[in-house]
Image 1 (tube, rainbow, N blue to C red):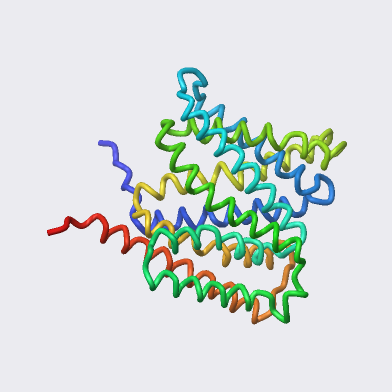
Image 2 (cartoon, helix red, strand yellow; image 1 turned 135 degrees about the horizontal axis):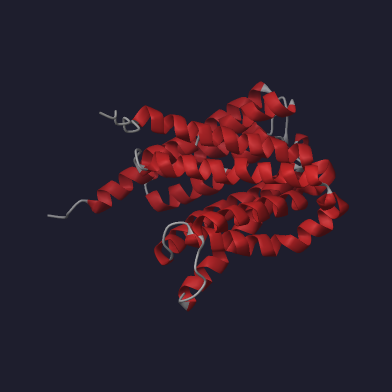
Amino acid sequence: MPVSRAPLGRPGAVALVVGGLACQELGASLAVLLFPSTGPLGMVMLRLVFSAILLFAIARPSLRGRSPGAWRAVVAFGLVLALMNGFFYLALERLPLGVTVTIEVLGPLALSVIVARRLSAWLWAVVALAGVVLLAGGGWDDLDLLGVLFALAAAACWAGYILSSARVGREFSQLDGLAIAMGIGAVVALPFGIADAGAALLNPVTLGLGAAVAVLSSAIPYALELTALRRLPASGFAILMSLAPAAATLAGWILLGQMLTPLELVGIALVIVASIGAVRASGRAADAAAQPVG
């Protein structure tokens, strides 16, 4: 008699989310190492192009029979994907990985605070602000200002990504919307990536490493997260994703030799705590809104 496989439990789902975070930061670290040959925008193009090819091969989305509203949603999603990745890699060129991801997390955090509409959520926003101030270490002069601006732009795009993906999810089934949006983002990034990378795109090794970044940063994390979401509540998943700055800091230290001061580490910790607190406050607000009145 065949032995049935045990269903994935909650600890296993947590391990999948952590594994996805580790793959994302490994992919980001590899991308940083490729910057001297491809440039940040060349790396964005390679990631989006290979991600689009992979998603189209898996999802095989139909382009026919889509409403104008669906096309507006997916085009907006594709533009957000291109901008978010572009600003993120431009920031990575100038800032440590842990600092970049910590600033980028402020986008979803701000969205959680706005959605919650609770005083406690705004208190978490103050905690996050204190963390960002500490993140400057000895002073904001120690951080590249343009890099900080790029990271803040990526944060705004991440908030837009959350809103856009929700709309695309309502208009498209399964991975169709993501695949089409990734293809649109790749087309947008193409001219900028070619201009930035130039002849490096003719190097098979560079192309292979670019494909590896796409798999590590997009394909594997998405598959792991999708599986984990079947076993975890959305609030629990969001809290685990709030640990991204810690994963990025660890990856930057181990893989790129990027050292941070104790004050910067405290700042990152405060942003993580604020993200978890804001997610919990947002979840409580949603639960309260769902309760019947009477």
